[in-house]
Amino acid sequence: MSKRIAVYPGSFDPIHNGHLDIVEKCRRVFDEVIIAVLGNEAKEPVFSLADRVEMISHQLRQCADCTVTSFDGLLVDFMEQAQAQIIIRGLRAVSDFEYEFQMALMNRRLNPSIETVFMVPREEYIYLSSRLVKEVFFLGGNLVGLVPDPILERLAEVAASRGSGSAS
Ligand code: PNS
Image 1 (tube, protein in one colour):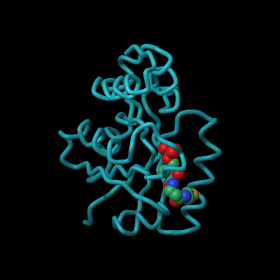
Image 2 (tube, protein in one colour):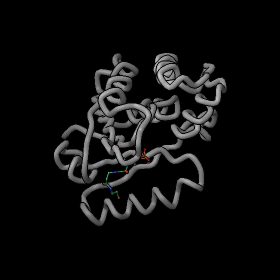
Image 3 (cartoon, helix red, strand yellow):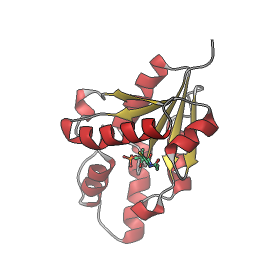
Image 4 (tube, protein in one colour):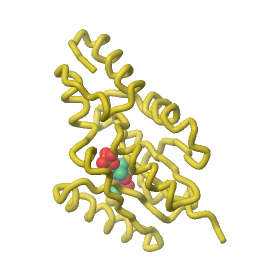
């Protein structure tokens, strides 16, 4: 039987515990998980693409069946290159649904052999997003238990370089 490969794409700016929970769930279902980080500078990420790939790789260093890489352009083109047919997306709330549904249908239209599988993170992470992580961190809020410590340290470095106050 061929390997079941899942691609988990995203901006991951930065990765948080909700993302890591989805990766754990994927590992139970698929033989290999490729975390594909979008190199879209138009979104003006806080962390460079190289930093995001490096931070995620560090978090998943014990995971032999995980690969962390970056991509540009269409996700379906990356899927073909990776010889993968399953896209994983985390679904947190009804508010995610419309955007995710549109993407799933467009990706299927672009390549009908590709399926999108939605996974729901644990309840304690259901409200968590990278956008909120950045906002709360840079305003000095406590994110312990929601974001891995090494990522909090990297956020603190960014805050220090910007001269903005922060707490962990
Ligand atoms: O974490 P995000 O920012 O919600 O992830 C969005 C992502 C990276 C999955 C999406 O923007 C994407 O796939 N971008 C690549 C370009 C593409 O294929 N666009 C058409 C999607 S239907």
